[in-house]
Image 1 (cartoon, rainbow, N blue to C red):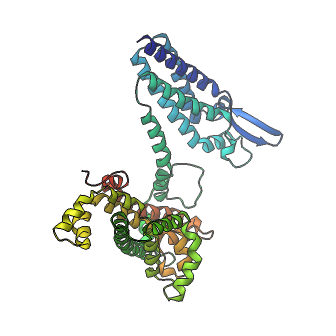
Image 2 (cartoon, rainbow, N blue to C red):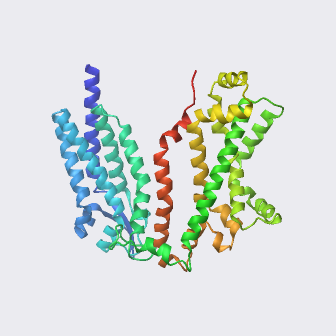
Length: 416
């Protein structure tokens, strides 16, 4: 018991030291800027005097967490530790806010003689943010709270930031790909409506339907082929079985785009180049190589089911379609969703196969054309709107069948 109390006090002490250092780190150079007379460094205090509203949350959070940390050590009670954890969490949020508004803050100070870059951020802000996260972990450990949630929260925040930015830009009224501010000044839904009404230059509805058709047929063909191949390798024993599995494994190690020129010339020779059929064939053929996950799933299904059905007179075909597949819903869903997503996100193959066939573009290639130099200023916000429209159905579908997706990767079927 004494050891646990000592460890708890040591963790609180380390958290206090970290928060004190965090507050002191604001005095370190926070921004480096190259002036005419040479290299200069500006601390947060100097920046605060020029643009105090932007950095005020950072200073308040550092001071508050340091004060609460001292109280937590003087009176180590769980209530104070909870307040300390809340203060440190606020410090982390303040640090992230400072990073996101660093350019706007630096521009407001008038200290920059050149465009703001991430490398202009100096030691102070990074030390502050790092110590705030470390102190938060230590405090939660002293409270015997799981720190895994904080790690997952930080990771989720990092992953969600680009998505939030994409959605905000999709509703931004101001044109252009680059702005000096994070939040749009004006919001509008015209970016979405113009995607479907102004189709003379970029026919987004046609590209969307092309991708949907290719995705549906690819999903059906790939799912059937992968499941049949996987079941064959899992259940049947025949000559060259191991050799064929090794060949598939070796071929899967090479990136698919290495063969795209050869694939294009083969499709051109048989008259299928620049057609949606060619995309279905390429995606289905490539997807059939990913049978290893499905084979591992079928390996978990007891062979006694096959043997019992065979004794009752069922053929291999009947066993597969009527016995095995009904108990393999997770792997069917997993295979189908991965096959369905592929045409939506692929850019390399469609750009080689379609080239200048404008009407047969998919959304990946069509949206990319909006980012060309002569179009990017006018169409960038519409590009973001198109990206949101592409992501919505896939995201909803994935959320709906997430349970089966996870079971297909990590689980098995009938056990025992």
